[in-house]
Image (cartoon, rainbow, N blue to C red):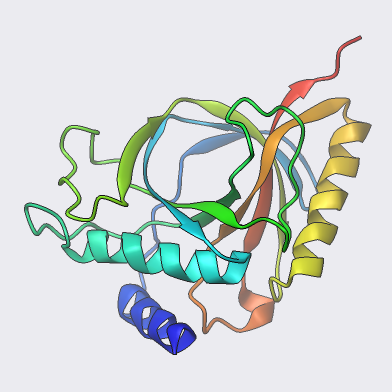
Length: 206
């Protein structure tokens, strides 16, 4: 039932959107096949903390933030959708520096949408649901792998491992949790889907 509700919300959310959907602005610093180093500009996100496995958390977080964008806010204002929807495993400590893989053992997640660049933090409508939090993210650099197909746990962890191996070849150390980003609605054919795994990083110490 929850899957059906999520698909229906997603169909409403994405229907009629033939135009390009806004994505976070970034500059490609380096590219090699499906791997990239990106420099992201500052952005504002709407974020919720949810529990469950990755699939359950992604669906629950999507519904909560989609409701905010549809007008469940104090001014009842509708906000244009953006991509991607991101899912981040909640580390045991906010200062945790070792990489955390996205896996079935994680029970708490941060799910977020990037807000349109036309808004500032003080111009976004205030959420009615206290679970939805707005925050500004400063400029940041990320290592990214892009892939298509189904987002199974094994696929996500395989891609995470591939990204870590590529980063090691570039003498880059992953920082914190791996972030999963999904760019397409649930009914998109697998070979047309675009998904990404991202890591913050720092150069290896010499």
